[in-house]
Length: 218
Image (cartoon, rainbow, N blue to C red):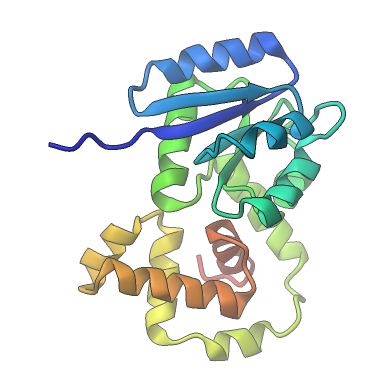
């Protein structure tokens, strides 16, 4: 029986001690493979050229090239790479900004190790991971921006099936689970997801969820 490939992970944080602890936490899950570590974004991209990864655990505050700049560049250079942002600050404004910018998840640095491992699995399976404080920040951000232009027009462009798929994405179902629930193929689900992203203008699944939150669909 063919062995499933491991989830390739990069750790990007300027604190070596923190990276070491994170590496020990991830070593407890045999599905993970920490491919490399980096002190800042510039060093990360130098390594990424030769060692692609599935998930990046990315610190917000770093010298030379910080997490925000790194996240922005990743959306262009490696848009399929999942990014989980790490910080000590539970700022609703920061959380909303990072999720808007394309992050797949957001974790505080004092999270329980089980939560960290769960978050990685979730972003690989669902494309996104929300803690309760993330949902709260996005909801608050959405309420402040209900005047987003052309929302009604976008609503009109979405089909009933696309609304169904969007609803199930927001409930954290995987493409396979959505396919089983709607009696369609995984390929069809992925097609609906791509159409949703194109119509809404979302960079990733986080953008779809953010759209749904802002428009009262969840």
